[in-house]
Length: 240
Length: 190
Image 1: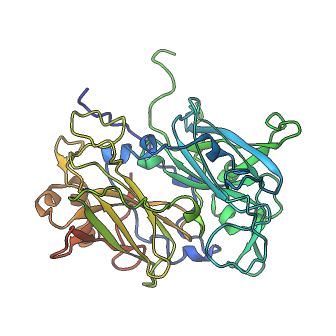
Image 2: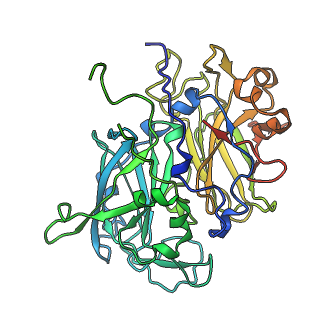
Image 3: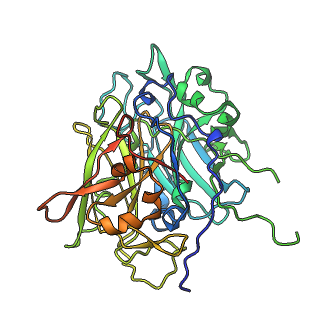
């Protein structure tokens, strides 16, 4: 085996993603590129990526209620967040590194940046976790439901509760960083980051309550599937 | 068959370094023959960006990627993943990677591309990742033949080339990233 496999990815679906500049989210105005992107041919540099080799995780990393390692348990509403990582054809993608970070139950992050928001920290919650998707693309985290929190974008601005997700898939082109929201959040209509996504695509960022995921005497269940840009390989065999 | 829509991208926000830019992840190697790539990320008002997030992906010195699709019979150092990431410095907007100079990677026309490092830029205030490449100023001959550089308008080509700093040891290549403005870095669609 000496020839590399060069996969071909379909065109990136820009209509599924926010614009580079979205003035309601003020910081984008000076930071989004203004020139047209230069279209280049896909080479091994674009069709490979760090996902397959960057996968060192341990079981404990997926449990944010205890991974602060202090021996205690995080305070808040304990939840299970689970789903599948899929390509555009609906096939599960195994071996994807999912990394998450989030605020605690009170809406406070463990971070050195200063915040004017006087919410308490929880010594048993660091708010970071990771896992690798299984054979069918499935992933699962145990965490606590993050609280909403204020930010400085505009007067009385509040972010809806969310969990940040980073996914390192099989190629450079499938790199995705996004945020997962919780259905029926009353803050959606006020949030320019959520609304920066095209209207028809916004619900793809929303996790739904799933009673089948909920575990008795333990935790409430939320389900959320994530769709990454995939290669052009057809899901059907010849003649099917 | 109906295709599923991609999950939309969202900004990494101001707190990504909690998880994504762990200490030492910008040091891909400690080998004696390492190189340094460093620079500053600036916005459209020429201010440094204090919370940009950079990821690099590259082949090793043999030109082979540490990826299952790259099955070529070329040397591959298992400890060199070819992936690194870092946040820019909050006070200065600067970043630094220590890595190995990549080798030649084939292009679809049967020739070789000039040595390059793929770079993804994200940050607070950026709703999508942007993709670019870092080429090297001391590879003028290979750069002149490179498929991607040749397709880049000549006036903007310089934004893709990291400048070797004279007399530096290990060699330091300077690569500034401009998100907007006259010298906006060339970003790719592929």
